Amino acid sequence: MGSVAAMQLELPTSLAAPDTAPARLRVDNVSLRYRTPSGSTFSALENVSFEVPDQQFAVIVGPSGCGKSSLLYLTAGLAEPSDGEIYVGGAKVDGPGADRGMVFQSYTLFPWLTVRENIEFGLKRKRIAAAERKEIVDFYLNEVGLNNFADNYPKQLSGGMMQRVAIARALANDPQILLMDEPFGALDSQTRMQMQQLLLRIWEHSKKTVVFVTHDIDEAVLLGDRVYVMGARPGRIKEILDVPIERPRTMDMVMEPDFIRMKRQILGLLHDDLQEAH
Amino acid sequence: MATQKSWVQRCLTPKVDLPHKLTLAAGALCWIVVFGLWAILSYGAMVPSMFLPTPGDVISAGVRLASDGTLGKHVFASVEVVVIGFVVSSLVAVPLGLLMGSFRIVQAVLEPLVNFIRYLPVTSFVPLFILWIGIGLEQRVTVIIFGVFFQQLVMIADVSKGISKDLLNASYTLGASRRDVVMHVLGPASLPGVLDTLRVTMGWAWTYLVVAELVAASSGLGYISLKAMRGFQVDVIFLAIAIIGLLGLMTDQLFRILRLKVASWAQ
Ligand SMILES: Nc1ncnc2c1ncn2[C@@H]1O[C@H](COP(=O)(O)OP(=O)(O)OP(=O)(O)O)[C@@H](O)[C@H]1O
Ligand SMILES: [Mg+2]
Picture 1: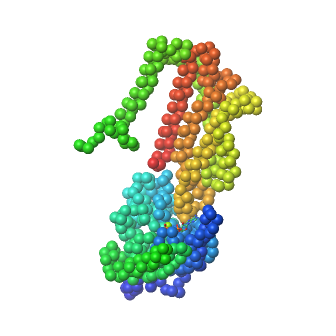
Picture 2: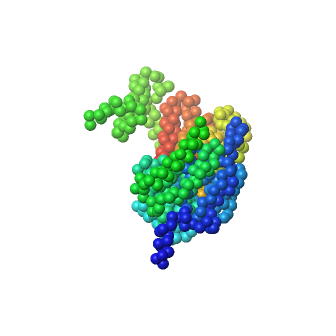
Picture 3: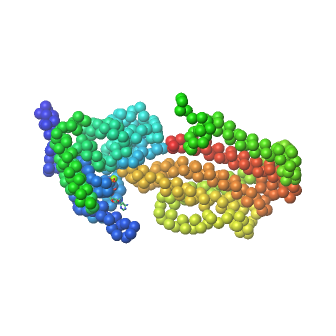
């Protein structure tokens, strides 16, 4: 018993996931082209392929407009790739579904529902009984520290609180994978740091597979097991980097040499891309 | 404290809030000025009483007509026309408008025609309605419906167009079906905007009342003002106008309170 626990402590999750296990998310040669108003086609993503193992915290960074959001929308099934396929848990993505939860950059709580009712939304769609619903909602309210706000309406909440509810709402559905599109992008830096801590803590508990989009390099290194660096024009994965920093992660780690080295490496990759653009 | 602006400065700065009492006083003052002018012009006999009644005349006309029951009858007739017309119009315009704003195909079908019709003056259709429908209640109701329906349709379509796509996307990722999205997202999300539209168009319904009762009506506030015009009873015309205004104000407040009650979650 003791040795198993010790092993889990020693191994970072990215290594703990054996290579033979099927990936939770597999993006297979995906391209996405938009037709522009002038009639030509614009290639937002070109031949993107990568995998995210189960229980991994994957972070996607890249310059603005490189197709990060598009990639998440495709995975969520809210848009269709022009070419290629996406598999989540071995099943091909064909339209949106509750198995892929998403947290958006904009505030997307239902303003006519209380915090509790917002978190309940997906559970009601699944016709889960009221008693069980209450249990699940209470658990996630506690996870995001909003027990005292269960009966408040979104307009009474701060931006950080709203995103906490959005995270709870997505997790309450127990999705296979949690997609997060710059969820803290609109928050001030103080709140942002609190949210990162909160997310890390929740993730340690749930060990959900997460795909997290950001353009904040600190955030990427702090949160991720792996960082997928994207380039623009056309949108593609340039480099996949493992983050060699142990968990649990804390704010103090941003000063460690490993952390700073990692940041410099990502910055270099993004910088190359800027140079190419000019 | 030292930087506290004076009332005058506050009044002259855009978008600065004023104390509730001051805004009430300002509103009351405007009424007092209008009534004062009216009183001076009428009691001072500056305008012949044939054209401008005194406030007292209007009140006594009201008492006179109310006591023999005719006023109640005419008010009821008018309320009936406006309410039936408004309710029938809203019952169709609200769901259809929501569909028009959310489903591109409905929009594509309806929009060109609706945008043509809604700029046509209602009055120009009155002869046609009389020819087709006759001169009963149905004709008057039709005028109200024609006056508000197309406006409601376009305004409500705009309400549902304004609902953020991400709100729909979020509900899809939570496992909502298309039906769920219509019933549990588009519906409630558009409620405040729908109520606002109803409030505004209810006011418009009242403004079409006299047009509706202009021809061949035998009761209603528009009818008594027309009759009063022929008999030079300018006090009755004033009375009818005042009552239409008051009824309009009442329905407006009703919708305002309803909006606060059922959509308090909106800003
Ligand atoms: N509906 C659309 N039609 C045409 N082009 C689009 C459409 N949606 C996105 N694009 C383009 O596709 C590219 C990728 O967009 P996307 O939103 O995925 O980028 P992003 O990496 O999320 O950017 P950001 O960091 O600004 O959020 C952008 O250049 C954008 O202009
Ligand atoms: Mg984006």
